[in-house]
Length: 277
Image (cartoon, rainbow, N blue to C red; front, top):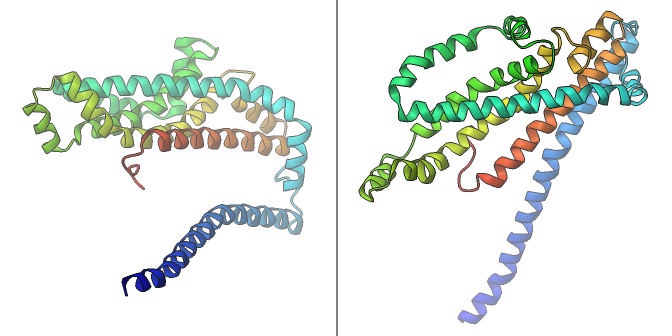
């Protein structure tokens, strides 16, 4: 009787597994195709509005004209993308490393946090376009002020999330570390740091996008190369197709940067769902 029951259940289990895999495959394709459909619909609507309203090309170009410009001026776009990439990545690294170090100090020295965290908040409230001229005057007209602006934009979100992650340790786990006579460094590396990684990667994904914005804004203040400079040049020349193409290139780089951090998060944070998901 038992053997008969087992044989009867096997096909049902195989069918259930096949249905589960089919659902997962459909969901995967759904997640991939829906964004493509959304982007395609937006492009069709854009093309239709430009055609029906007879919008002049110098005001709003058609998608076809933008794609043609992307192809014809690909070399120019990549040449200007390179300095922006260097500034954004350098600012990303500098701002986030500084935020992680200062967050570690704040967690272990509460008096430092109480004294300097309000100053950090005040600096963060200053608009980027107001910081940029000051940094250009202080650091010159090279890459340095652009890197500094990108770093400042990245700094605050990472600092806040890192402090939160380092402090939100399970009290029972902390008590266990005390019972085991763990040193401060052992508590930090074996408990606090692991606990803070989901919070840190949430901030890093924000920084990946904002660092590009910071670099571009910095390039608006006194430079002749970079995505920001090309945007200004195309605007003054009423070359809207080049303007749109430049914006698309900058956006694509920002998206690739974001996806790179997302991939790193999936590789590193395996034991816990990312914060906010």
